[in-house]
Each structure stands twice: as C-alpha cells, then as structure tokens.
Image 1: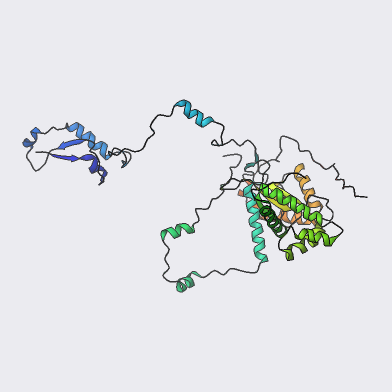
Image 2: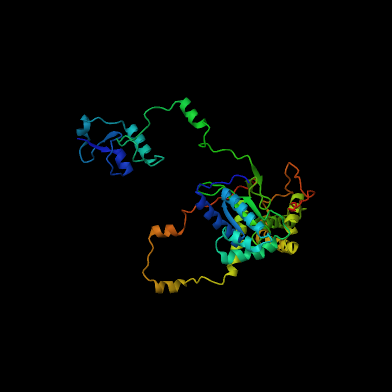
Length: 182
Length: 209
C-alpha cells in the first residue's frame, strides 16, 4: 500500500482545483515497508531535490499557471513587417520628441521654449491667492476637533471615504527636471 | 479684419462666451483659458478699450454695453480706471502668454492679462528673475533689462513697485541657500543675440481730416 500526495498542492496551500504537477509516492509510515514493494518509487535523491525546490521556490506560484484553464491568446503571430508598420506609421500614436526646450530663468529647470514655466506660474498664482485672502474679510471658521466629536458623534468614515479625502484622483503636474543632474 | 475662430459653437453661443470671458478679464485683470479663446478675448478686449478713447462717450458706452456682462461693475471700471490707465497707449492693452498644455485633454493654455494691471504675470515673473540675479550677485542681462524698462515705463510708480516686488520675491523664493542650488550659475545667454526694439518708435495713426 502506498500513499500518494500531491506535493504541488501542499506547498502552495491552495484549495483551487488544479492538475497535479508531479506525483511522488511516499511510503506510509504506519504500514511496514515491505508492503510498498509493488508501488513505483522515485529515487530518494530525486525526492530530496524536489522537496528542496518546492521549499525554496523563488516566486510564489500563480494560480493561473498550470491550472488546466486556457486563456485568450492571439490566434497568429504578428509578423515583423506588420509590427514595424504599426509602430512606425506617421500617426500620433508615437510620442513626439521635444526639441524646443529651454531653461527657466527663475528656477533653472527645463521648460518649453516660448512658454512660461508652470511651476513658477503656479507659485506666483498662490501668492495672488494669499494676497486676495486678506482683502476679503470673510474668514471660514473651522470646528475644533473636540467640538466636532461632541456635535457629530458616531460618524464613522469608511475606508473608501478616507481614500477619497486624499484626493488622489486629481491629476497633478509633475515638476520638470533640473538641467544638470547630479 | 482677419478671419475669427469659430470655437466650435454657433454665433450666439460664441458671442456669449466671449462676453463672459471679457467681463472676467476686466474684473480680475488676468485669466487663464485655452489659447484660441485667449486670442479671441484679447481681440475683443482691445477693441473695447480703444472704444473708450472715442469722443462720443454715450455712444461708446452703449456700444460697449452690448459686449460685456455685469454692467454695474464692468462699465464704470472700463470708462474710469482702465480709460485713465491706457491714456498714453495707442494699442496693445492686453498680453497673451503661453502656458504648458492642460492636464487631462492636453489643450494649449494661455494667460490673458491687462497690461500694467495688478495681476500682470510678466511683471511678477520678471521681478522674480531680477531677484534671482541680484541674490546670486550676477549682472542683469540685456534682455531682462529691456523687459524691465518696458514693464515699468507706463506704470504709475512703476520703478518703486518693481523694486518692492523684487524684495518680496527674494523673501518668498530665494531665502535659503538650498533654493539657490539648482539655479543657473551664469547669465542665461541664448545662442542667438536678441534684437531689441528700443530704437523703433511707435508712430501714432494719422487722424482723419
């Protein structure tokens, strides 16, 4: 009598239905070794190597590999000719090179020629905002956090609402690079 | 007159749009829109300001009132403050400055601003450049000097205001030593020598006789 164990399934610890990778017969410790003579046994060296491999596998195995399911794939290979035609045709699919680049005279970073540096423009606009704040006398009152808790108890934000408050969905302009990289 | 842009609207819609934009421009003195809209707004704003120079004020006011909204605020400003400000100018009351394309739809953006206004981006940017040069102990290059002269020339108390702004810019942006690190160490010199139009005089249009 022999006990066959699907080693691949054991190592991954998954309950997904999957085809066995390799079947190795391991002798049952509760039965005497003499009765396993009929079963086909892998050599002990192979078993050891397999065990070692399964323990030290570099990447955790994906569910999609070798599970017996087939996924959608292109029907035919795209030929070299077709691929190059697609990539090199004169459309806007390619990103154009920017040759008209300059240096911003106030911050020293790269900018497009004949345009203002957006970083400096936004900084100056912020100054304008600060100045106009002083002009209008309406000051927005902010509740004290302790008062807020007393007035609005039991309001609990979900994870989703907390994420929304970070406003990560707003596009933000990244700053251009300085001219000399260190 | 050149051909105007349609801006993807019918005539009435376009006119209402430009009316809105011009009203906003007179109210805030500087607005940011797409480049095409900016150029059309500039055209209308220049026309309206030159209307204020007419002798028949009543007629001019009635003409202007059909091109702007918020009559109670815009018209007094146009025929009072702005008329006085541009008394010595023949044209060129507005300026369009190009910006980086807009995030999202990549449309060309521009700033339209009233020259010698309270929110003149070119004035502030030039002040920032001068502040940087002074902070680094560098000589002010020819092009910047030329720009400063032009900006200060027709502005009342222009030089005083400019020097004050330069001091403010030093405080705001070039206070720490770290802020001076990535700046250009020598004067910015373009490979092409700029041709400065100091020598060209603007000849006023001949009057009808």
